[in-house]
Length: 191
Image (cartoon, rainbow, N blue to C red; front, top):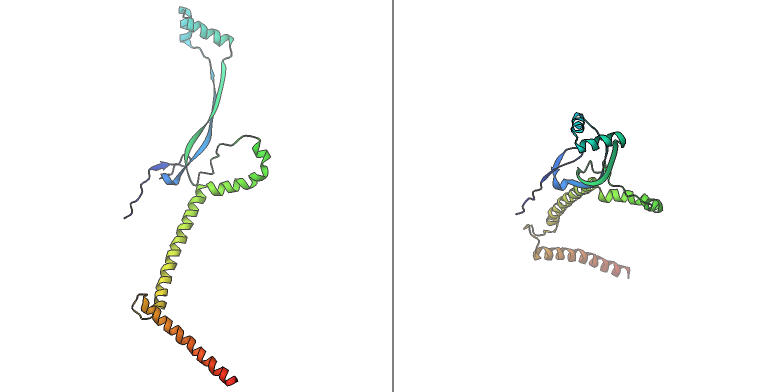
């Protein structure tokens, strides 16, 4: 008795659809963030300055005499879960370099081949088509077995056994012996 495999449920990061984990695919994407921050002072900084706080004095000096705009930015990669429909709609991490320029003729064939070989949508489509082909093959074999038994079952008992082969051999031998006999008579008439 076959046991069913149970998969956990995962959510697509793009469209939010929930599917079994074997139908959700991981993709590495680039994540970048940037922003800016400003030095600011408030009423408590001024109160601290009036009371003689060194930190408040330093904050006021930096605010007045240094640049108050600080910009930051970074990029990193992140692995996200996507369904087969969203997989190619989200761009992956792009390789940077001169290889694309040098090997440009190869990339013409590489990109469609990569899509066909790594696409989850194509994979699910191939699995679906393969399932239909297997189902049709099984039905065809059952039909051929049914008709084959009816044709080869010479004695009508529903089984293929030695008796069926002997009956078939006798029928074939009598069929060819009739032609052999007619050919001998024709040769004697010609002479």
